[in-house]
Image (cartoon, rainbow over all chains, first blue to last red; front, side, top):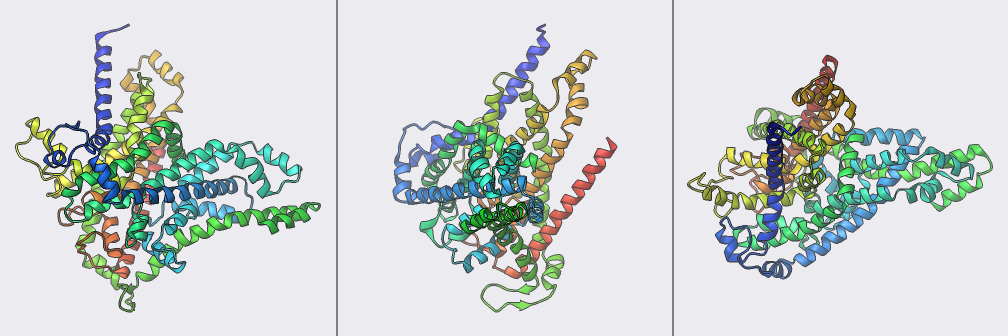
Length: 282
Length: 316
């Protein structure tokens, strides 16, 4: 059974997979390790990946001087409300698209579907900012929160629709005979059954909010104390003497990717199924 | 909401009213999202269509200029069309590398190699990070004086002096494509894996009984059966790359001298002054006109693609 050709083939395959593994992991590991290096070592560069001396200076400086504490709090605040809001709006929309019977819902469904292909993307930011100004929401994180929560993210909505489609319709019918209204069926029967869906939608919303750059950036350009982490970290690059701030940048990047990394390693199943389902079902 | 529920309860005895109540509830529940969708997705389209006809920079009074903005874009704005060219170059080259790579990885992991779920988790990892932060990470790694990439290449004696990764257009484009490949190859691999898992094992068994080699099986079973997923992945990949903004702003911000500007960043800079020393003056009217043109270009790409892939289906 075991011929030499097969073994060589296996070796080639694993070697290839190993190269891709290094490609995928190296940048993350390099940044995390470098954030513990001394300023001197960072500026000199070189091929050494593991710090010669492990230091926490960069984190202390980032936390105190560059106000990363404040930025982290802002990011948590922003993500918390986006996650909470998206869970409610996406699952409600999913329920309506799955069970609703009015022509209105059907038209809205078509429109959301079309928006996946015809959308202005970043080009819509300025008009969105304009609207937010009318409601007095510019300069705060509430503008981005409202846009993320009520703007109908097609991916999240379609994941919810697909999942609720799989719940047996008999549940609704039985409840209807018992006199439940459309809203009560949702609130007391469907929503409590959606726990895995809540996890998936919540994670996707968290990823979006935690990674968000341009949307919070254009809303809070001039309000420095409202910036989320990503905006603050990227700002270190665009302000003049970038190289002298590498230590702050490395610590900042690490602070911003670590929570994501931990959550992903713990819950990767939900992540992977969530991000793919939305596209395939849509 | 309470009122509605009460109204609904009152009409419970008559089945006709009951249905009406349900409808009212359904529409009421949809309303907040519908309003949000209209305000943040539909309204911007009309805003852009209207202001495309004006000369407006936010300070002086807007002035109606008809189609002048469009005339300017088509006759007198080489920089914009260059950014369109860059966008398609990046999307094209990236796709040629990414699609085969993701497909091959998916096929390998689907064949139940040991540690397949480990590799899956690792390859997907880059897709979970913020694209802006990823841009920052790579701009540090590719920095010309103390970046790790140059240091490694030098220690391997592959280069004699540091390469300026962001000082020629060619190098910068290479880095952009590499980084955007890094962020999405795992996601596309997962799409392919979902497609591959729908192919029944019995098909491969039959083929190998008939004496088909693994390579023949790949081209005659795997490829035709993942074709629908393939179409979807190509579509999403191209549209995603055409909309790329954050990565370019953070990674090169157009360096060197605007040579790697893509269509989205080009227009973004007409809407907002980005960075400390932004060279572009804010022009809302002209930016709107460019947005309209870009949206139309993307629509055309989508329609052509859908037509072509339909024809492909008919042929095979």
